[in-house]
Length: 143
Image (tube, rainbow, N blue to C red; front, side, top):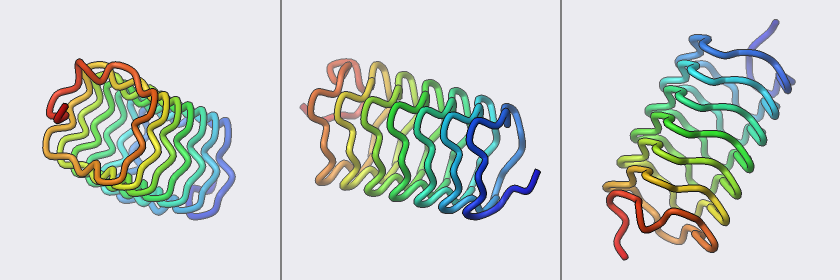
């Protein structure tokens, strides 16, 4: 299986794989299983990660700018210092995710599950949090 930019990896079972520093920009990873995957410093900009299982994935310092993460499972994911600028996280599960110092500027988080997510020092400028759930449990969110 070839793993690289613009590849079609939709529906693939990649759980636990080490894809650190991989260039997956514009790749189709929709409905893939990337739970427990290591994606440290990976380039996932403009990738389609809709309906993807990224639970417990290591996405520290990853570039997810302009990515489609709608309906993705990111529960317990490590997104410390990740770039999620202008990402679509609508209806995504970010429960207990570590988003400290993440760039979520202009991100779309409508109806996202943020129960117990850690957003300390995250950039949420111009982010859309309409109808997001669990906001009262989020660490670091100014109310």
